[in-house]
Amino acid sequence: MGLDLTLLAADWQQLRTLPVKDRIGALSDAVCPPELDIAFYDTYVCAEGWLWPPNQDPPWCGEYHFACTTGSYWPHSCAGDGWDDMRHLAEASLREAMDGFLRDLIWVEDPDADPSWSGGGGFFPPATDRYGSPVLLVCPPEAVPAKARAWQRAAPRLEELCGPFAAECAGWAGRPDTFEAFTTLVREWGEVVTETARRGWGLVGLP
Image (cartoon, rainbow, N blue to C red):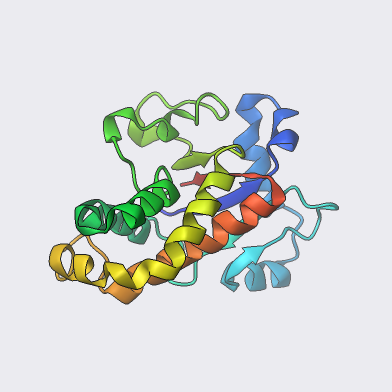
């Protein structure tokens, strides 16, 4: 069994009212409360896109279900590695926009300096090692608007990456199967950062 990704957008102000050690548990309970009706839960887990917990008024967090990954983290890792391979062939302004958009979401510019696995700079509990991390990614509210702006610049130009993808990724294990698979996942991330920025929230990915 591979690693899964549960991606949540959340109001950092709400989370700051809780001790650091309780924040991940609060998120998990919010999107999957113990008292949730079984019939509703079955519908909830099969839905795609944004899912807003029924017991929050007003909502302070939401979960995004990617349509093309069935909850697995592997496609996100493959897409990030694919971008790392092809980015040197992208036109400079497009590369800059994609870097700003994908950095620390599915692409890590410098793996040795990656802060996300250690608890997002202390906002979530730290791990004793990279592979025991309680989080896969953390994007605080102050970083999300820049990602949304970068996405706005990159979105109309994704087709320009078809050639770089063919040259560096097509047919390689550990990379997206097709260019369409890559762009479909990237566009879903665009939807994620756009809505999260609109709300002024942050993002956290749980394994």
